[in-house]
Length: 460
Image 1 (cartoon, one colour):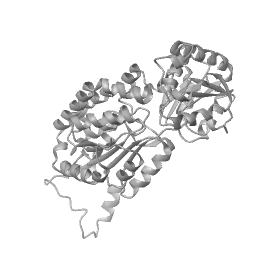
Image 2 (cartoon, helix red, strand yellow; image 1 turned 45 degrees about the vertical axis):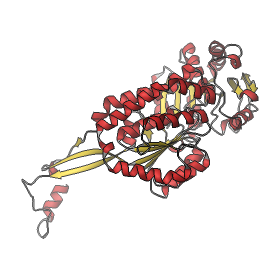
Image 3 (cartoon, rainbow, N blue to C red; image 1 turned 90 degrees about the vertical axis):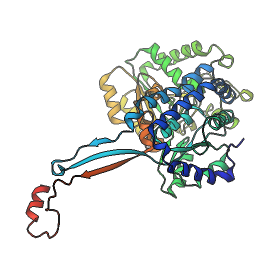
Image 4 (cartoon, rainbow, N blue to C red; image 1 turned 120 degrees about the vertical axis):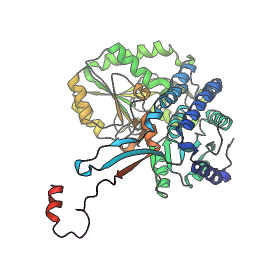
């Protein structure tokens, strides 16, 4: 199903431009009304969303609510704070501008494009959309065709509850994306892989369109000796194997202090059995790989190193068991690209300097995890590494805190969102300086003769 005919994309964008120019979306009350409308639409279609994600990813219903439908929290947060976000903010002026006042006015960008991924195909479309609506934009939405059932549900929800002159969905594959990227937008927000991110950025450059790129990378997880082992293994197990590892901020590989490595592996094995039973294939709480193509890519990683837990797979079910791999080489394919699946390599270190050096030898990751109660070690890792974000003594949970901007750095992304950061991403912050008429100092006007000493004094 293609909600908007590909040949009609240009017309839809033009229609949205006309609607934007009416100024209606600049009305903060209108934006709040649309956010409430979006929330109600999600609540109304909850069951369809659950069923679509089950069909696409075999996603357990609890995970769907925790990681997809929970986007309602983003909507509530925006509604609560939007009046304040949208107000002009005073800016300080120096004493030599004593007759002036300065303010910063947030204003919407116009018509924006949001391109979503397949791994959290509902939440990662709706979350940036919340920011686009809150900031007062019109939007074209392109869900992932790989998660086709969820794409269809999103298209139906938006078509039923919103005027296409305001919000419209374009479904389809590469051809749809190419046609969209040939058009001029006022901002492009993309979530996906680095390779496609480069294509998005190249297309945007044609029109000097600003972009937000939420990419990924190999997010390391350092495990020190100074930990609560029971809590550590459960938090790593959950963060890695939720959604069958298909999470952009999932721990991609473990860097484990050598002295605790055996205990950690034993603890992870125990935790996996508690979560998914002796045979995760029979667990109602364990997802599946999105497609045959991604399944085949992941299976090749199982040839690297030594599988110490898991490794079982069923092509017909696109099932890969939660897997731990030991004795991997940094040159192995599993350590060369983002895994994006339920496979967790383990690398040991004897000194934290080794772990830090390894992380810094690679492209900057979207997330970095550290399990340690040692404050000086925490500070050292924070100071000596760079990543999109850091979570200490937990995994993945940083994405749920609306007050924390979420985004990458370097190869893991450009820009950020969540909470006010979403509003800022989809806004232009217009600087406004105003002078008064009660005083007019002559020193800046020509003729300049005799004024240089005063100018130097003012600048000094």
